[in-house]
Image (cartoon, rainbow, N blue to C red; front, side, top):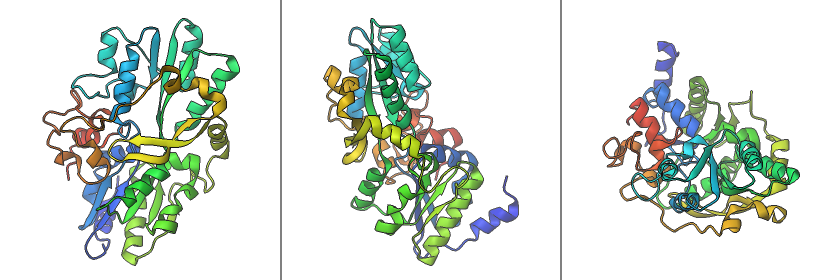
Length: 356
């Protein structure tokens, strides 16, 4: 816990004229910030926004509706992380939990290889793993594909919903009316791609960036660095999370990704189509691509009526500014994924009452 002296020292930090807007792009940061009340510790004139850092939340609505429909096909089992079970479809109350109650086969797994094991134990079923996440989970998904190929498990496939952070941040910064003075960069992603994976922010875009860990002290230290950079008119890349993040990243993990996956264009909730912002399959592993195997075509629908998840992840709104927040949209009865995901900005704001 911070001493009163440290709290006052942070609040007394100078802020550039006109104020400063900072953005975190990691769902774990979002939760930690809300839990520790970090927004309330910042100096006057400093605003902290939540960006597209929740992998469940950025999954395009058309893709969610597609895997819900897939779950009802005869002989198919959907294998997924627990976060996806209650992610709502376009229709209120529709999710994998409801589909399971209607007879769909849905299995919660703790790793992609668990899904391969399940497929091997149930050769009579086609097992489709929902590959959700950023570069953090991509190595595990790639390893599962390699593992299935090595073991000859042919009734296993992956619906790749994987995302790449750099193209999304570039697209975000290029959007009209978007303005952020500094980025709190995700430590989890940086353990894979390295701190250098965010060099483009100050190097090409002139935006300060600090890679941060997940304890309150990590986040506050990183925010102090960002505030000092912005006040001084500097744009540098700093690595606050040096105990876990190397400059070059995890080359072994990146090599596993490169063996099975390759960048492809993909859709993001709120951001639309972004070139080379997702992961698809190398040609030699095409048989494990669920989209090709089952002819999955995601719909164009990008949102549930009234849901402002897209605007929240672009930093255009805070969660409490959504008209549904806490009224028609709660963790018990979510309308959008930002309220149901354990890393969602709305779930964090609701749980910890961290309203701005």
